[in-house]
Length: 153
Image 1 (cartoon, rainbow, N blue to C red):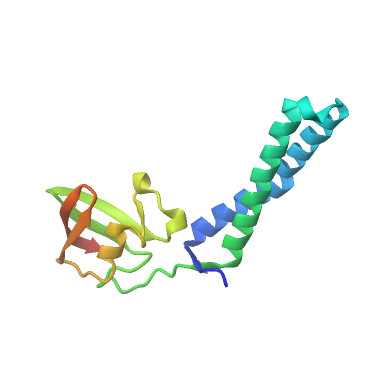
Image 2: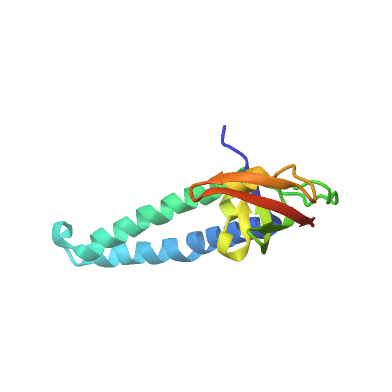
């Protein structure tokens, strides 16, 4: 049994869009490249053929991965309870005098540069269940850091 994949509605849409492009466009493009390379004869020394076959393997693997993720998607419900940090919460925190804002998302949507951190990350896991005003110490590879919860949306 596959593990549930936690996603927002937006994240699920992105996965479905990528899957559609791979299945409807990229798959056909690479098949055409393979057929073209085969028409040139000797496949043992045909770099175009080898490269197209590698790309085909990547595309098919990604399609399978995306289909599995979509099939096991569990949509993160944004709770109206803003008293505790949960998956889907947007949290304003203070760290070393600096104010930051993060949204707690599933691992597949995490993108710290855009303010989305995984519920499985050190910081995300530590923030889960915290309340406004809590000071949470987190042991990171860079050392111990304290996060203060300023607001929960």
